[in-house]
Length: 112
Image (tube, rainbow, N blue to C red):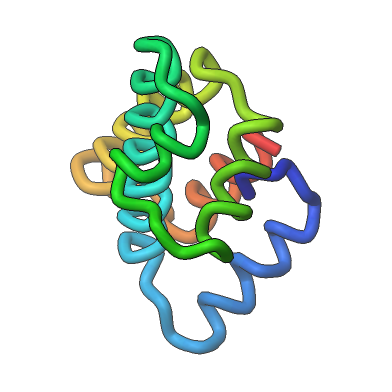
């Protein structure tokens, strides 16, 4: 999703099929967005990418590579908009009782 690949929709559907609830997926997305914004904050304060990843608690080489790839594709402004959209999505799902799966899919499509 964060690398803007169209396969994200199929991956989302696969997660549904194996029993993951949309709110679980949204919580994971929120976690990634927050972590990426934290890293951007460190970068703005003149920390290197490696230092920023370490300060954000990302220590394993595989994880670091994933986050570096996401950082190379995403912009801070896009992440902030994603965060706003994600909160709006959850509000609409929980208060307006909108279709949870359909609305998450629309959210994913709108951000890839």
